[in-house]
Length: 211
Image (cartoon, rainbow, N blue to C red; front, side, top):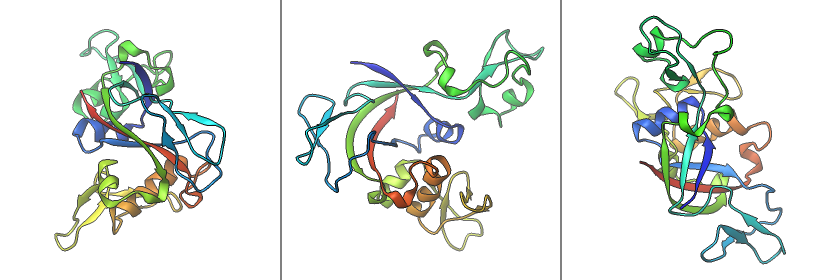
């Protein structure tokens, strides 16, 4: 069993902690230029396809390996807090985080990429890895990405994160008609500059469970 770090934004960390997120999609790099799926080389984390001599190595490992989550974090600075208590940006709406703000100078919010293994609070066990195109995501898998079903007025169900979704194009909150549409906007809000939804890149699909 191997352990590797993986970065998640605060909304995705909350979805993992709540148990609604059990999948993550990451762009295969470099992205295959042919419209052909990658096939796993048995008992390895290497993937290949017939139109190219190159093999792709999955950077996240294989089923049975573990991922430890890197997230935005900081140290507490408040009389009611334990000295150098670790705070996590995903918890900033909680009473504890509201009372114990990170220090404003040396101990301000730190980017997730700088989190140490010892400060990570979430471990994930990889259950499965596959390769697919971005737009092939199903309604069920969009739900496993953390997209929730909710209703605002009790009449019709809509989909989003935390009751709303923010449009990547307009910056305004709105509710989506399907989970897949909500995930499309979520994807573009994170990856729209380099790998927008319309480019339909090949992805690593990592299924996991929190342990």
